[in-house]
Image 1: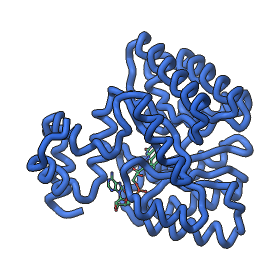
Image 2: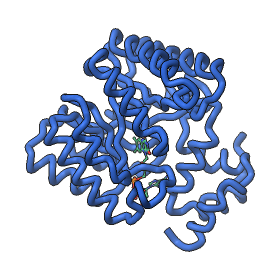
Image 3: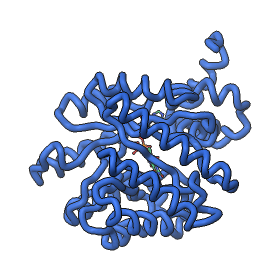
Length: 301
Ligand SMILES: Cc1cc2nc3c(=O)[nH]c(=O)nc-3n(C[C@H](O)[C@H](O)[C@H](O)COP(=O)(O)OP(=O)(O)OC[C@H]3O[C@@H](n4cnc5c(N)ncnc54)[C@H](O)[C@@H]3O)c2cc1C
């Protein structure tokens, strides 16, 4: 990232919301479930799988937990009715994990059971480090209750992740990503080379434990490392998948799919787009150009 891009990435909270919305449009399917279904349909048409994320997080009001659960149930119904190749990704804090762990467990359990009955699947996204232990706890409780229908995420920047692999239940389903939240160096690697090294270690450790891994990255170096591991272990294409975010690295996405690997796209939608958009823009290596061109582009809506 250039110096100017880095400065802009750090100043993003000062950028007016309408501009953030315009430049982050590529990362989000839209405000409504209908738009998300359309996006998934198009991705499925290109041979890509999807995971739907109803945007929202850090909920502190119980009525919003109920609302999130309803929105997810609707999304699950839409997936089934439209016969989409998609599952669900949920943020535990959207289900009240910060206010009441038992409420969160009960609500996610309800959704996981419905997903299981429908032959679908629910991934617990991993949020900041205050959520790591409770999220893994949720996963360890739900995995045996809903076998094959629940998964979790491990972050390669977390120093603890290699230990967390050892504590996973058997036949775990894990999305492996670098990690996006800002964490202190005492608990997280900051150096890109170290994070990448740990990503590869974790991928090997997860496969050694017999886990199904969602290899979630747009980093060509890691994709290449994953290819090497898949080849060496002679993994069947159905025993792992690549995962990418909507609106990111589409040429690489096409290449991975073209090479015969399964690939799932993370499709966020909904009214609570701001926090997610900031995280994505912060990672865009050409953020300055994006913001500048959006200032001079005519408005489309
Ligand atoms: C499917 C999926 C689910 C995820 N779930 C979680 C989660 O639950 N918890 C969590 O902490 N993190 C999650 N992440 C985010 C992840 O942790 C990283 O922050 C993010 O994927 C960027 O890391 P990278 O591996 O792509 O490598 P990077 O080195 O960040 O990116 C590699 C290259 O990809 C391109 N790129 C990356 N991001 C962008 C962008 N926003 N816009 C344009 N180009 C970009 C650039 O060309 C960049 O050089 C998820 C990522 C994916 C793909």
